[in-house]
Image 1 (cartoon, one colour):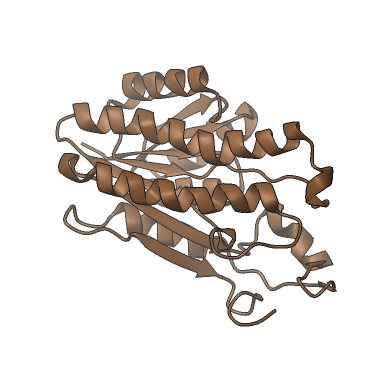
Image 2 (cartoon, rainbow, N blue to C red):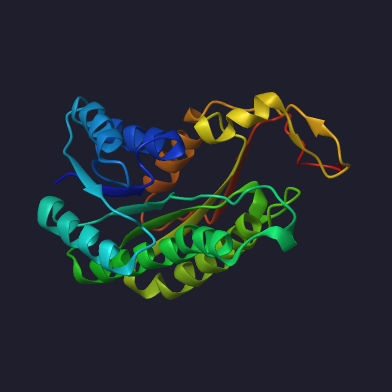
Length: 249
């Protein structure tokens, strides 16, 4: 029986790359996102790898939609071996005091609450299925360690993901459920196209930042997903070698 991976935010960027890498590894994939046409395109590429691909349109930050997504996953693919909590968003890079409550809540809802809701449903399935267990991989960020200027909502949620990762890893032990976090820095995706135009730095300047091929992240997800049951990659940082993160800036 093929293993099953569910990827949120699977329509583009890191999610698309990870879903296709998992498909090439032989995983059947459930693809979660808000835009059905993009998910269908990814599903077609995944099926070309000889695996099953299930389009699961929905909002990962909505409790009822998440329940429906996992019910369809169970009906369509039978189980879940890997959840990649990847869906995420950010707020406009404006002074913190100018952010609206709605802007703050939108980031928290998808980045943090969405990861919690999907992990919760995955854990329920992983506990009940035979064989029991599975892996949850959370998309952290360099921002889980160090913020960019004017990024309070995103940074706060990514710091919180670290706590969620540790809690899941601890609580899942007796049920053979592991949890990992991959902290990504400047993968070349539509979300990081602005790096080529220059982004604000802590010293007040604006600089172009190096990026890396998104496939480096996809390989990291596959590595975490295919570890033997007695091993876990708790934290990994995958970053553009020359991005301004290590050292003073």
